[in-house]
Structures are given as C-alpha cells and as structure tokens.
Image (cartoon, rainbow, N blue to C red; front, side, top):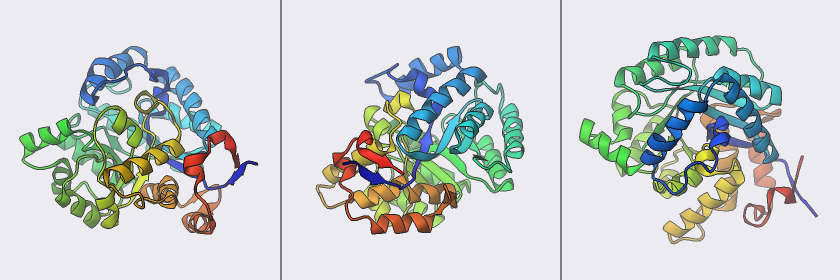
Length: 335
C-alpha cells in the first residue's frame, strides 16, 4: 500500500537547464569541473531555445518528485520563467551575473538591464518571482555585488549567491581580503533576511554568529557538495544558532538527480555520521528543511494554497517519517 504524501517540497537552489550536462564531468574538484568542462560546454551549447527546452525537462522531473517550488539560477531566465509558467510550478528565477561575458549578457550593464526587465515583466505573475543573483564573490567584482544588492532592495526581492562553496574559495578570500567570505559580504552590507546563500560548507564560528545576527538563510546542497569533494556544512552549529537552512538539489550536472528527498536523506545520514550522533537531525527536521525552511528563505507565503503554518501543522500531525529512508518516490501517493 502506498504512503500518502501531501507536503509540498521546495528546491531552494538549482540550475534546471543543466540537466543536459548530467554525467558530463564526474570525479572532479569544483574549480576543474567548472573551468575545464562546464563553462566551455555552456559557451558551446547554451542559448535561449536550449534553456527553454532543458528547463521543461528538468521541471517535469522535479514535479515527478513532488517539488512544488524551485529557485533557478542560470542564463536566459525569461525562457526559464516561460517554461515554469507553462508547467504551473512556483519558480524564483535569477539571471546569473558574472564579470566575464555569459551566453546572455556581454557586460554587467547588460545583465542589470535584463534583470530589471524581468523584474518588471513578472511582477504580477502568479507563478514567477524574479530575484537578483551575482554568481559568487570570486566571479563578481565588489562594485557589482553592491549594485546588484541595491537592485534587490529596490524591488524588495531575494538576493542569492554561491558562497563558501569550497576550501579554495575560502582560502582565496582570506588571501585577498584578509577575511572569510561571510565576513567579506557582511562588511559590504550584503547579508540580511532577504539574502540566501548557496552551499556554505566552509564556515567559522564567527561566520555562523554573523549569519544568525543578520537572518540570512542557507540553501544546503549535500549531493553536489559531496560529489565535488567541496566539504560538509557544519549544520549542527547552524541549527544551534537558529540559522535557517533549507535544501537544494543544485543542478543535475553536479548532483545527477533533481530529487529533494534524496538530498534530504543524504543530508541526514552524513550529519549523523560526522557528528557521531544518530539522534541528530531527525527525519522530521529534514522534511521541514525540504519544505517550510525553503518557504521562509524565499519569503514564499503560500504553495498550492497552503501557508507555512498549514504545512507546519501537516508535519506536526505526521506520525512516521521513515519514508525518508525506506521508500522510493514511486512508493508515495502524492495528493
């Protein structure tokens, strides 16, 4: 008999169109994976039609895994928004900003103009919310980090960025700025409750205190972090400080599957192992990370007519979360 499952899930960090690159580059560290494989392949293949077609495929895969809302950072996000509207899935779209030319913007000025256009175009959309997303502190200048944050403030929207994703990024920031990536962003005034940071596998105790103080959220992507050998998030310390942590699949090129339940299962098991504590991070907590924590991070009030309070009540009334470990997606009866 199938397990009834009604809790809407949130994929708080992905690059949907990268399903095309699934399996392209395996067993490589992040820097080599990006610079020698992903970025060259994107330069060769990515255009508006490519993004639209691949996003449709990715969204259908996510919907099959009961993901009801997603956050997408990529290129040609107008096409991403179109695909998501057609699929009737709640999507937060971000045109990825880098200092060097991208498939959709030759300069940061073009990126700013394109993002503003999207912010205006979708401001009344039922399914689409446009956000602002510089790629990272190592691929985006300080001026652009500040300008993009101001744009997010002007439109009262979410500011999203990859941060502290690897030891290499952490060490380079220390060498260049004499401070950690989190402290660097904090000193620039970029961290607040509208900021969502992807990854954060390398954090100091001071970093965690800063995140707690500012109310910034983290999108934890355990599958890609593990696959790329990037590190493991200090989740226990973050939870102890009440930092909001949600879950993302990342792109299928780095995580292989767009299944937030699988991400949750790996998250729980890895944390139990590194903390030597089988009681840490219960299945119920992981389900909250997969659902309401993502809604909080994205300032998403409702999914399918259900509020955070409604979904929290559904979770609290659930008696058995063993399906996180025991069942496959086809063993669940989504309703």
